[in-house]
Image (tube, rainbow, N blue to C red; front, top):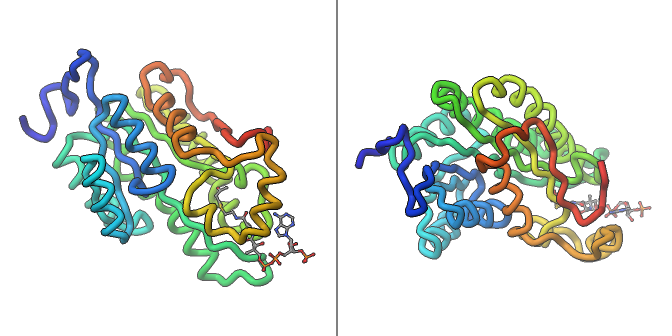
Length: 257
Ligand code: CAA
């Protein structure tokens, strides 16, 4: 069967449900990997994008069978070309999870312009570039699910993260606007805002600083990546078709917006 499949990019799975194609950026580790695997378990045909760590990507594909495609989400033409590669391999992308994100933490009085711009370009620019690359097809097919991964720190603010928090807060306004644009075409856009989660990103935080942060989480623990992934699967599902423009916080009570 060709890339597009017999059902406008979907094929019948064993249960008779339409099997959709999902693409997760930054999908070979952490929350992205957990999300890709959860979507696969739910019956989606999944592709992941990654930036540069090809060994991590190869290990991920070997373990899960999920195809991984390299490009920089901060590079708009690379996103267009990357989506075309994914669609040639799997069919039209119907579920997009913008998960790729980086931190360059520093107090503002020590933050360089490069630290500011790098985080803006990947976290917020990457979301624009990816959505811009897929939205035309979703509008034509009159179906789409976009889930943007935000952060508790985009809601609460976080010392040392003026750059990161600005992008994660920015994603919320972006998502609400896209939700308005897509609603009449059955395209939903939502944010999942994780709290501190057991990933390499959080592991990189200084241990003394981390102990203070942990003490501020009412649940007394980090989230697991799987706990975040489950909510993405729900928002991607047909059952969530009337949920759009919302921000779902999953943070153990750290911040209640
Ligand atoms: N709460 C309250 N006060 C804090 C604090 C916290 N979480 N972290 C640091 N401080 C205080 C310090 O005690 C210090 O106070 P004084 O000036 O009175 O001594 C002041 O803030 C500056 O802190 P540092 O000495 O640590 O300053 P630094 O320049 O060496 O480091 C920093 C600054 C790199 C931002 C460091 O504080 C840090 O790594 N903070 C953690 C930032 C963070 O939470 N990042 C999250 C990464 S994971 C992620 O982003 C995923 C997600 O979505 C949740």
